[in-house]
Every structure is written in structure tokens, then in C-alpha cells.
Length: 388
Image (cartoon, rainbow, N blue to C red; front, side, top):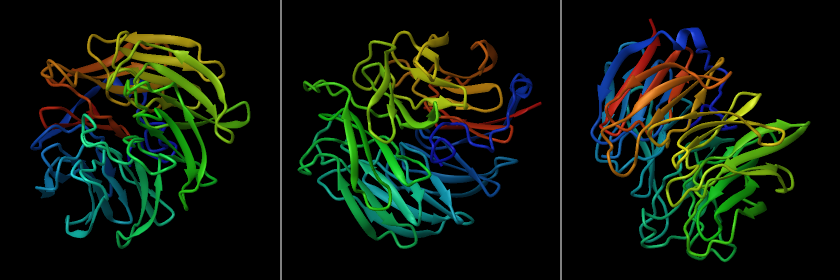
């Protein structure tokens, strides 16, 4: 699933790539899809599954890259597929969530979000027999939809509950973040304008726990599009997330109180800290798409910057962190999208261990499974890397 597990920390147990291996990464195989691959690939059962902006969902042999199956005409896929119980789940900007068989790609069910023209930027989240998905608006918020989280029955696709971001269920509060869920079943998700903050709710019922706005919206559209990361600080559960305005905050998970806050960069709509941070049990690693572009390593107790790796290009990719190494993509959303790279950094001080020129913006968040790294780019290329 997106970020590897429900903590959304980009550091799942299966990510064992170490710094020495990262320095020897080579292209194992490539595949081409129709449209940009902006979401993170999902790796399971010997297959790599990825979606594209031209509405393709495809599965490739993890070892060779050979195409196993492909489905087209699904609607633009911006997020990441999720795999559970031999099924693949994918959400589209045309408002659909679909379930497919992992082995052959046979469609099992199809659900359409309510609203005039809803967009599903959020990636499917599987929890306790439910599939949670965030509903937002199309780019530009025209029309402005009522933001909500919907829970579907994983087996059938039937709606189990709907929770609105706005207390009156009116337009606004679009959700294009992907929820994180803790061991007690509490979920946390970023919310768009006019809330521009974070919402905590019960994952099994949708009941609201608390909500926090980063700032008064003032029609600035400075959303929280990153997925919150769950961690423990001084024996208490905490939630870390940034906003496109460039503000990064750590919250007490139980109360929603702010533990600390950093103004890392000066952001703007669809820039700033739009990528989800990573966490390896020691430090937070925050990507920036606004100057200073790159990666910030933060101390979890007070948010102090431990090191910063500056990149020439913005970072929309959410970093993956393994054993002493962080992997992330670079490249723009607007302007020149024919430049980009995938970079591996040492978590000790941020120096480059390895890099690969993709010749196209790599906005996809890398998936690390064992020592395998899989990432997509805006040209529709899917790259798989392994240590030589």
C-alpha cells in the first residue's frame, strides 16, 4: 500500500535496502505505461502493480518486469494501488474505486463516489474489512465538492459509512491525503480548504475525534495534502504532517494539541511540503517542493533541523527510508517536466550515495521491498532497481 503500512512512515519492515547496497543500485528492468506514473507502485505476491494518469493499471513480474496483465480506460490514477487478500484496489480522478483480482486483473467490483464531479486523489486504505478513501474536488476546485471519507466493504464495494470533513457536509474540506491508522483504530488524514488542517476520526465508524486548522484559510487554498505519519515521542503517540504553506507540525495524537511547529519553507498552492514525510524510528525526513527544495531531517523531540540536502529540482515524491538509506524522486509538476532523478541519501548526514537520471520528473514515491526499489516518472516509465 501507499508508504508500505498504515503508519504511513515510508519505513515498512520489508524495506531492508542498506547504504552499501544503495550505492550499487542498477536498473533491473523498465516498463512503459500510458501516462505519468505519479503514485507509488505496490509490491506483493511477486508482482509490481502501478497506475497511470491515462487510466492504466498494470501488473509486472517483480523479477523480470514482464507484463502480467493490464487494464485500460479506468480514468486517471494519481494515487497508489493497494493490495490485500489477492485483490488490487485502485482509485481514480473520475471518482471510482475498483477492485481487481491480483493474479489476472479481473474486475470484481466498481464504486462511484457521490457528488457532481468528485476526484479521488487519496490512495485506498485497507483496515478491518473496510476500504477507506478520501473524496475531494478536481484540480482548481471547480466544482467545489464536499470533502469526505468513505468506508466501503472490501469484499463487495458497498458503502458502510460516510464522514464529511465540514461539520455541515457543505462544499470544501476536500481530502487528497491518504489516512494513517494507529493500533487502536484511530485514523488521521489531511484536509483541504477552508479547513487546511488535519482530521482525526474512528476508522471503523467515521466518528470525529478532533480537528485542527493550520491557519485561517483566507481563500489561499493552502491544503494539507500530505499523509500524516504516526510515531512515538517521549512515550506518547504523535502525528507529524506538513502543509503546502511550508509549515510542519507534530501533534499529540490523543488530543490534537501541537507539540512543536516549524516554518520550514515559504510554500504556496500545490507546492511547499506536499509530499508525505518519512520516519525511521529516529528522525523525520521532510520533502520540500518550494525553495529550499530538497529533504529536511528533523529531530522528533523539538523539530530542530539535523541536516538538509538541497536539490536543484522540487521534491513532490514522498521519500522511502530503509536501513540507513533514504530514496526519493525529484522533478517538477509545472514547467519543465523533462528533468528528474531518483536519489539515495545517507540518513546520517544527507550525502548522496547514488543517483539515477530519469530524464523526466520523478514525482512517484519509491516503493522499497527488500533491496528492490520501484518508482515511476512523468513520462510513464516504471523503473526497477536492484544492487549489482
